[in-house]
Length: 260
Image 1 (spheres, rainbow, N blue to C red):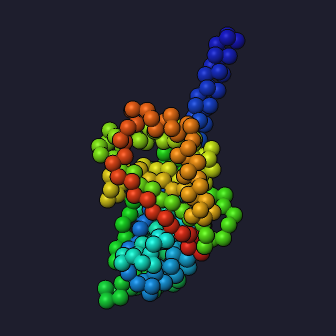
Image 2: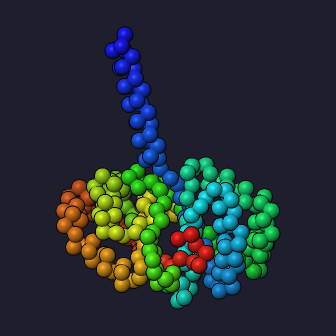
Image 3: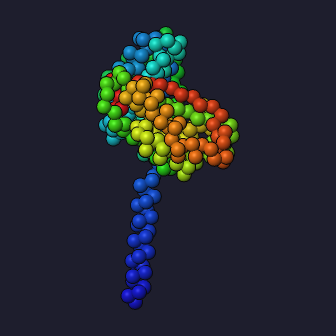
């Protein structure tokens, strides 16, 4: 009888341990909203809405860390872009929280200029939205440990497209089981997220963001990455050959009101 009881106790303990392990690796979802606009006046309207209405609303909903960035090349770009990165614990929260915003009295009051913009004077040209799912070995957003001035910090957003779904999944595997995430961590790349694009205008595709004290700091980190022995071994493996058909690299700067 004692043996049966001990067996049941060990089985229950193993089940709890397995559930705890699964929970600790639970994936997070992110929405990356990209505002496209043309004028400084439009950016002022978007900034005011985000800083005074949208981010406070998300904070009230329990979403503590929201990233807001602009492209460093915005000054000379004909189409300027502003990026909003919002983390969620469940996929269904994305439409629910976004729709509920329009019934929030504080948002209506503080975001009126943005919400009531007309077709003659629009707040933006369009919004492009990406829905992301955190990598299985790096499921959530991470807060960078940067100490420098906000104006100097560089956030690097990379998008890796695959020529086929098979090639794409091998690149995702390369980050996870292959150990590419571990290399970035060991070399102190200050990652913000690693994620699969599960819905968006460019697929199959993965995205990740790293951060640096400055452009010079960024260049030094990437040189150390290229020289790293583990990376040379990993990148030389034939199974990971030509897994990326297109690499889009963007350099961003955090807005003053961003949580990053």
